[in-house]
Image (tube, rainbow over the protein chains, first blue to last red):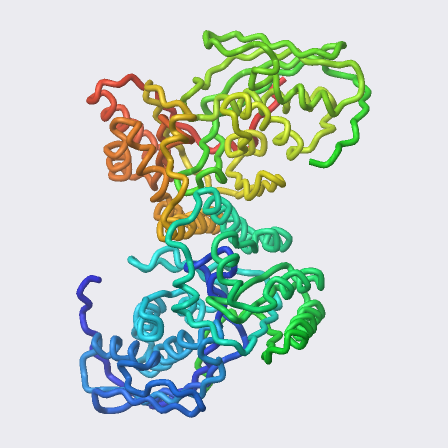
Length: 319
Length: 319
């Protein structure tokens, strides 16, 4: 990273904002580590308040036992980085009402990180670009999983579908997508991101990799050409899903039956255990939800479902 | 493959056509085995003449010692497959004036195969779809290299840039591309496709594969969004090029100097030894040509260069 010139600021106007910080689906089946999609639901509700001293305070208003030490908190760490690039004696108090369950595979840590930086930037008069915000927010992911990654952060900040072509240097491309309906089921089992990453092989067959890059190219082309059938055919993962799906009981059945119910396709959201499916109509998306419920009812695993759409704005100031 | 119903035909009109069968750039750097691009130049000139008996004759009008036994010829083998799906006693005589040097990495065998089936289909009243033609023409690639592949065949038949998401089943997607200028240098050294394939490792690092699918997604997005800078950044191959470029003296120097001269980017064409570069203007494309000439003049390797554009129609009937 090059040395940043510090931003000097003169504050006026609002001292506090409320933000909707939405959930996201990383990977989108064939785009492991490079694609992500923003959802309308679920979303966290956050307040960011401007302080007149250089400190960060985290207030958690939910039942989750997340660290409130700013350096260890996914909303706090990005703000520490942001403050490092600002001249002057200011700080932030962040209040988090988390609705996206940590460990769901729906970008819970990214929502906190993205919501915090979007809120803070608004109070500062939007002096930072979206790319800057992603750069800050990735420090939240580092706190959460040990690795800087942007496949939840980028869609949470930009909205819609984003491609992270490269992290170093950061290269984020927005991919305009058709108005899909998205059905999500979050089975209440624990899949730790670190476990989901460790079971992956470090080497892959060239043959499989070629198939995968044919599919991601097809998916991007399908989204940009509004070719829904192509999107469906391209939602295939021959490398990650066959390994990770073992950690999710009922996965294969959910996938097969959702497609039979009319879904274009889908798969594991992020590192799981949530599963998402894309559909072209709300009716199909609700049929797909019914199928998901039926499978997990039969297995006897509790779950939460969402029938939602792609969120094209990302984390948003609501007051 | 499902069993095809045989086409019955009634012939009238033309008995002979002349076809331009153009060269193609397979892989396009980050799209190994799945992307291809059709060129305006070089091109073969072929005649296909309808015969009233079930036989195929190949006449070679160039100095290359290519087999004229139809089953062993890249134009003949696809026509044998086509005839198998036609009822009636007809055949074809194919005359080939080859300008695309075999072994250049510019899709010489694909041009013969594609030109033959496009010409024959025209004489039959276009009873076969482009996808059928690709299916037939791949038998020519099998004769040439032992493997059915479509990354030269598909762009040669469809024109422009094509994505072959899958071969079995065949799934070809056209990718509308900006009006690039293409500079090609064919250094007169021999790189056999089979050698170029054998030196590749069968396994690749997952990390490298992720980089590669980020790049192919970026390239497809750049082409479809007309984002030329993104196309340039995405023309990066971390898997195949580092290995294959060893077979091409001067490769690294050509690439670096062409970019300095203003090219967006480029790399090995197919399995080489030809190198292609994309530019946004003809002036830059000619500067790039000068750079290529200078490098190979200095090394002391003979070469042929082309400054051309993307061919958006593919193999074409000219009379």
